Image (tube, rainbow, N blue to C red; front, side, top):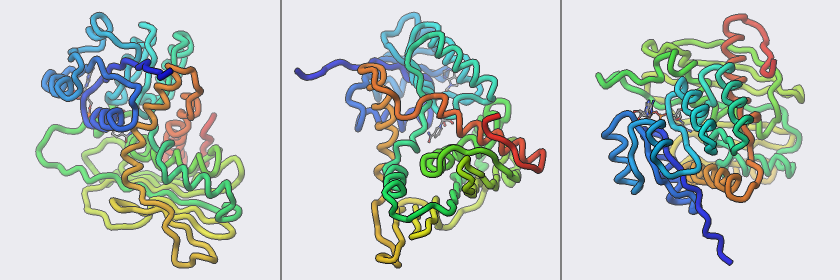
Length: 340
Ligand SMILES: NC(=O)c1ccc[n+]([C@@H]2O[C@H](COP(=O)([O-])OP(=O)(O)OC[C@H]3O[C@@H](n4cnc5c(N)ncnc54)[C@H](O)[C@@H]3O)[C@@H](O)[C@H]2O)c1
């Protein structure tokens, strides 16, 4: 018999990432039905309602009182994650929450406690876990394609955010964001490193603020030491300059290298004795966008079927903990532990 059960979900926040989630749901999450959309900006809520066919609400409270859904997808500025998540858990809802879990580690702990009390499904949306290129790299490493890993490098170059006279992005405000580029876009570059090299033990880092309008760091250069003893380098930068091509990731092993190119049209390549000029494994673009749908499909399966999430919320704290260890190291000028 065909399983026709659907997960009714409310999108909380109808800004930039809500569009990516909606596209992902349409293309790859057939078991999710968006029945409510919430935004304090009435025009945004109305536009999202027109797109999705869902009912618009001006606040989460209104949606919880009058909407019809079992789960919420929280897509808000970081400092608003806790209030929304705690409220949704108290109402017995399942929660998927955009990264980072919160703007501070204490706030993340309170969210985790509320999730445990509610006993509902809780997931932090980190789409890098579902990137086909990150997964293919993981599989090739496990299959021994590059031998024993020696080291790795991740280079995140964030989008240029021009000072064009528009409203100041909330990301520039430390009180709302909790940090800068490392805990925001940089998180998507930390997750693949963890998938490939295991858990990070400690970091040493410098940070800077080349983008003066942004209160948090817009530059981070970090060395990550993993529990295995291996080391990797993480670079994160968002600046007001156009940036050239290059690599996003490089994993170097005793038998070869895996390299993921930056930008549109970027590819995953294997370099080894048989392919000294590189063998194209896949083109990453389409899969990167699809990953939003894959992650939400994982969430739907956990709610509807009770299947375990590919990455649970405690695991997903790893990127935030790494970012805060980087911030501590930039202050202390020494190695800082990630997990306490
Ligand atoms: N996974 C990714 O690649 C990715 C990319 C961008 C953003 N994000 C994450 O998504 C989240 C949202 O970021 P964004 O770029 O979409 O922000 P955004 O500013 O584009 O959208 C946020 C929306 O929330 C609304 N809002 C603010 N306060 C509200 C409230 N109290 N109740 C209801 N609505 C409210 C705003 O009006 C706005 O429409 C953040 O956690 C961010 O880090 C993830």
